[in-house]
Length: 183
Image 1 (cartoon, helix red, strand yellow):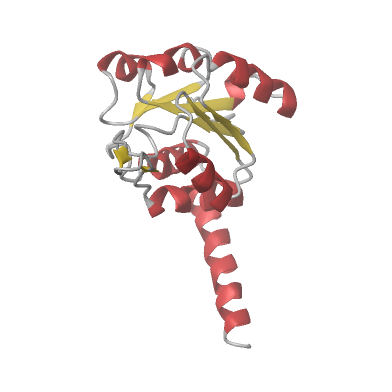
Image 2 (image 1 turned 180 degrees about the vertical axis):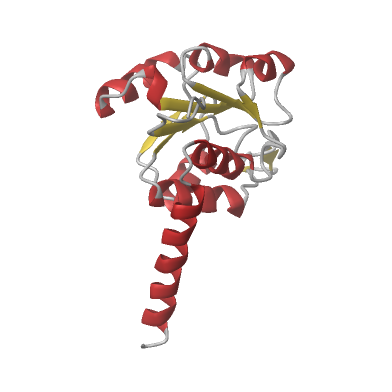
């Protein structure tokens, strides 16, 4: 195969600028709001169907990030971690993984140390220019618009598993439809 994603077993992603457009909305009470794309949530479902582990490492602490991760049942969430190498190493140890089995999706300068270690560093289209230079793949989609989902698709296509995972996903959805309709 010789594709950068051929051995990937885990996708680690930044949040702000990847899962969101990087904007932070605050109301008059200081409550924070973020816009997340359902496309990235679908990316989680596809990654799970493919047996890929997913983790989030966000440099900025956010209750909105925690809520979205909880909603998507993402177990490994490091929220408010500027030195992303520490949780990266913890994830490697927890899952007994090597650098060549991990992809990282990022957009900013603090993502670079991890991106330089992984087999498949991925940048979103609106990432900082140096991040794009390091990346082996730059999404066509901007952060907050489904870029994580695109990264998952790229990995599965690189592993020549995209069609088989979609077939498995379709069968799963069909079985759920049959359960709901009482068949």
